[in-house]
Length: 104
Image (cartoon, rainbow, N blue to C red; front, top):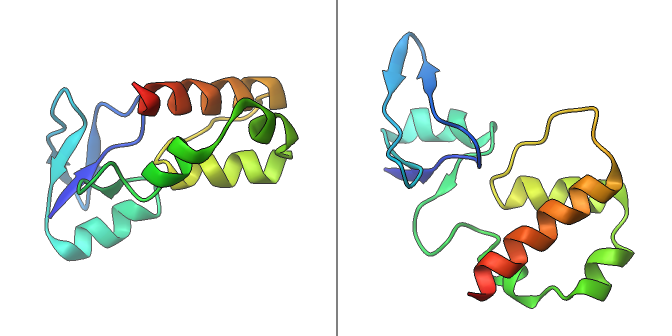
């Protein structure tokens, strides 16, 4: 099964096994491992992940209206892990960056 690693992830070890991550974020693994990795922000490789349509449909005003939980949820759905502490402005900037990249 092909997965997309979260942004910034360059290595993963699961059950003592190192799983290679390509430069484009591709990870190939079996289904049980994929299910476990999904809880850490890995998403299906097909399309552009589950949040592809959401990334394309958001505009700047919609992003500005998003509250903190909505920003975290959107980023998680996009396969992006976030480390605390982080400001709402930094979260919005990351969402804007991903939306702009999807529009290109």
